[in-house]
Image (tube, rainbow, N blue to C red; front, side, top):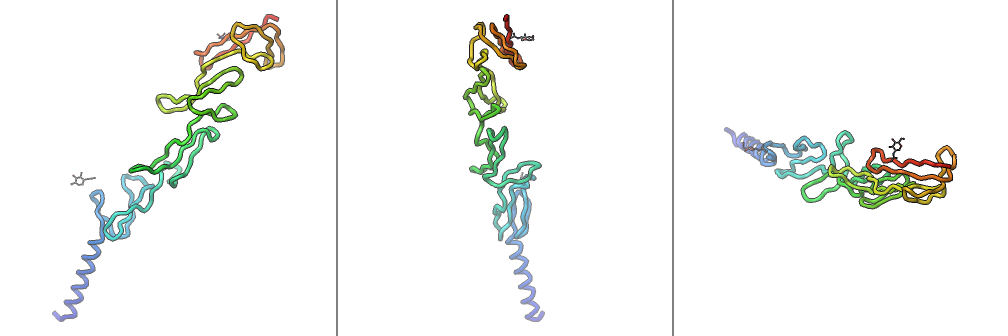
Amino acid sequence: MESWQLTAWGLLIAFAFAAVAQQCTDDNKTYDDGEIYARDGNPCIKYVCNKGSVEISLLECNDGSEGCKPIGAKKTYFNGCLVMECVHSGNSIGFQFTKEACHDGTKCVDLNTESTTNCMTRRCEKNSDGAIQFTYTVLKCEDIDGNCLNPGDTFQYKFKDGTIGNSCTCTTDINASPVQVNYTCTS
Ligand SMILES: *[C@@H]1O[C@H](CO)[C@@H](O)[C@H](O)[C@H]1NC(C)=O
Ligand SMILES: *[C@@H]1O[C@H](CO)[C@@H](O)[C@H](O)[C@H]1NC(C)=O
């Protein structure tokens, strides 16, 4: 062989060797230099083979059909009372609750605190399955002026249709679903 031929072969082998050396092996698979790939079918975490070493090229939260969301992205529910945020900590990345509260129709009520509307008191609680919801704790009777009275007391009451009863009482059932507060008037 001519010497220029030997040099050409040498260069070819050197290039081939360099190309192989720059490949990456990850998860029992071989990737070429510059190749971007995902593991475990998660499209929101991607890796790139950079001259033989594996680097992260995309790190976002997988929001299912909503796609990938960047770190810090928020999802809000119940008029902003429940907030989840894309958080990266240690080896994991995912949506976590950053605010957990119930919505009482007008405002947020923090977890483990109570809210009273129409003399009905509810406590915002987290179930064993992680769901956040109100649980009634006290039911009272509401008189014509909006005061809260005990069942058994006698008071003036204004029905929803505008009728006013002068001598009324109320009975409650906190275990019924939905809870019951009944008003009856004798005059
Ligand atoms: C990679 O291959 C080795 C040897 O075949 C095997 O024991 C191991 O479980 C494989 N790992 C993965 C992540 O597939
Ligand atoms: C309230 O009224 C309903 C309908 O009349 C009745 O079924 C229920 O038992 C009453 N509940 C209470 C706590 O009085």
